Length: 114
Image 1 (spheres, rainbow, N blue to C red):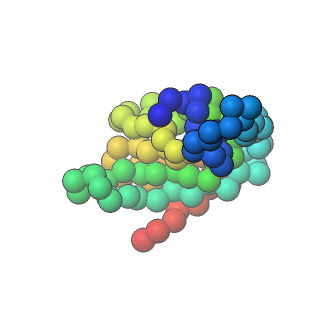
Image 2: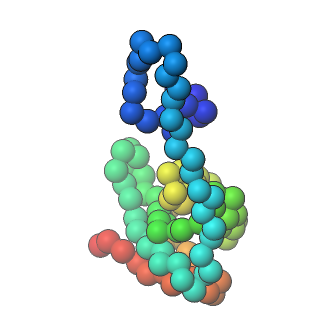
């Protein structure tokens, strides 16, 4: 399904010739200041063939700001990663390094999980 039709809700098919789809308009979310963000950093192995990733979630803001933060964390750790579904995934176990960097940037961050 293309991105332009993701926000259509309700009716799948209609025989009414005067019917028009109602499209939800997403409000542009503004990014909260760093000191109001509650970020959680945890390790994840699920569906990754036993490989570990450090995941950061809880970011509230625009996709551009999330991508910028993800990019800075990847550069900090010197590894690859991705930003997917509002979550930053960094390859490897870098929770301590990520936590120190986020606190230095002014975020409220903590480790989560075991």
